[in-house]
Length: 164
Image 1 (cartoon, rainbow, N blue to C red):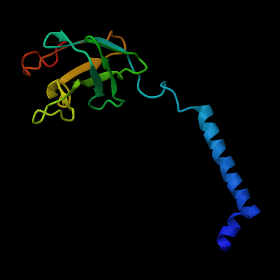
Image 2: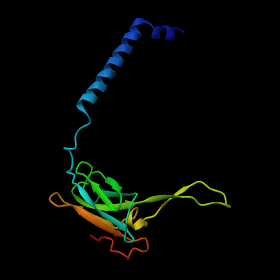
Image 3: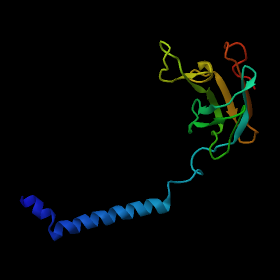
Image 4: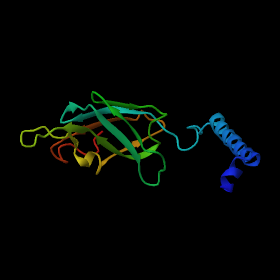
């Protein structure tokens, strides 16, 4: 019982107020200084291009640029709609070689015994274009960084993996 009474004594409240004030100072300092800027770290570039699957423009898909080798930097990704993608320099990949992953999951329903079942998600792009991607591109500071990807759902050899 004495422990509870001490917590409500003026000395204990003074420490609580000091802790709250110190916490507020840290929060305000963080808000005023921000989290940094994109000027630090590796330079990013804009990229754009086209993606087709079996000769048709790809939609509802994602393209990701994953830095390769000794190059350090963040992975960058963007949406593919009507066969086109574009990432600006703020969100684009860093300069250098990248493994390119293209994904497009589709939700499907498969009836069980004639009854509707829970939908499940399947990937409509072959894994050699995403999880086991063989696509590689180099982004440059002084280039247009325009890329074209012609994908095939039939086989790895239908289109060259590193087509331009």
